[in-house]
Length: 210
Image (cartoon, rainbow, N blue to C red; front, side):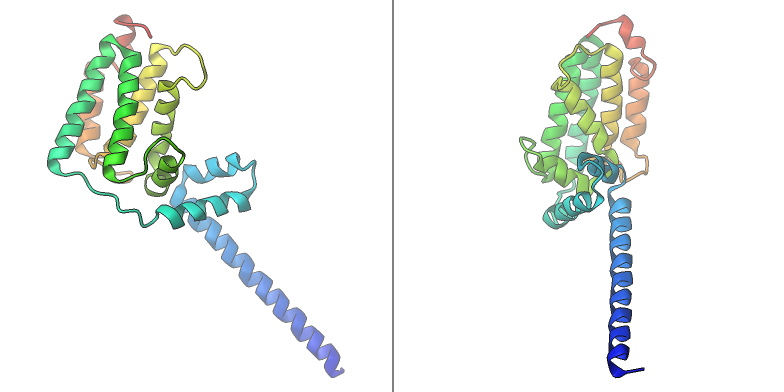
């Protein structure tokens, strides 16, 4: 076998090895992003029309920009204030469901800003929140859509109730009463309070209509 052939075979082998290593790196990177972002990973892929490479580039950019964002933990006094405000929103729902949902959405936006996230006037707030709270962001996204009526239609009281209940999961995490998937005292108290007001069982529909 000539030296030229040997060199070609070695070059081909090197190319194959490099391709395999790069493939493993890309797969590992994608797996890491999927674990980190959870449901937000699939949502981003869908937003990029199934283009996984573009979606992962988007998520990588979010981590680069907001991964080191300093998020201030709420003090005990602030947690008490947030809990009281959310309780008032739940009480308001009995008489004015639509207004209660609007007030809850505003409270979540203000709470996010006070914690150190960007202002909600642009997509930056959702991008930053997706890096730090991807598992609960759908609740915020849903109540914002309902409050702002992005679909342009009348919402039933049940839809408003469901949006508020789902948003509470995000509120509890953002307010420092829950971490990740672990239940905290506020979530339990909120569920009991909601149940008393009929929010968990839909009884509230007898008292008001959206």
